Image 1 (cartoon, rainbow, N blue to C red):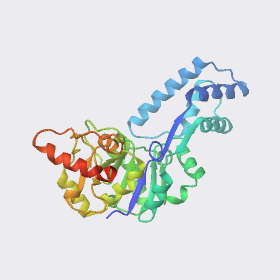
Image 2 (image 1 turned 120 degrees about the vertical axis):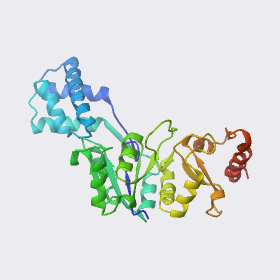
Image 3 (image 1 turned 30 degrees about the vertical axis):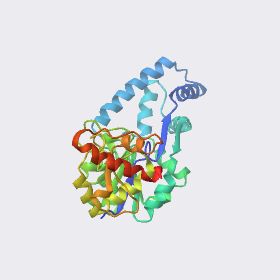
Image 4 (image 1 turned 90 degrees about the vertical axis):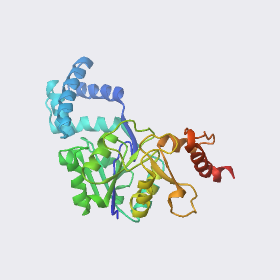
Length: 310
């Protein structure tokens, strides 16, 4: 029985990204205002070196704080990294780092909050994900917010997931993690013993570790969680296999053919994100299956679309 659900932030609950061009320009202008003339080439050289060091650190799944990273960059530019200067750099960075809440994210959290403890597990050396949640008025939804900069490790290290589980006071098998990265969210959650839901519109090609369920949109997450919370539905999923029933790809969600029908194996279908997305379009392709299984999949496909065709 699931008791808790944790979420990634960037790419899962929110779309995010840094405006690199504007940020670089504002960063150099800020240093010039402080009396330090730094060329674009000098800045880029210092950043390349710092990013290479960051890459090596993150290969060990360790995290570096924003203040530590930019202290190194500033020292390479012969700028004293005082707390005041670092604060100014952080301000410029946050002004050029855009985050926007995904459609229906608030509704999804409200629905899940009724039955589960919620938490955040986010990779961030700046902590802007926490600031974003506060700005959007979402912090009250979450019992715990675990940020990589605060614990010194980052996903997919199972340690950051275990830290969240400890704070949530639940066992690993009692929690599911929702994220958009196969390498970070799914691998890390499964290593910690949790269930996982991958939010992705892509088909999984080759992966050593696969999510329990894959959905193409955030609004399908509550249904996925309800499946993972039900022993009966999990048994049905196991009996159906682990491949899309239309194209045989991996990374699937489970969908009810007749919403008002019984919870039995004949009333469910497994679809990958691509086929699920196609099923929601007005134009409805026929199944890819051929041979003796074609009639079976065709009937399932027609049932899936019956409400739209009526």
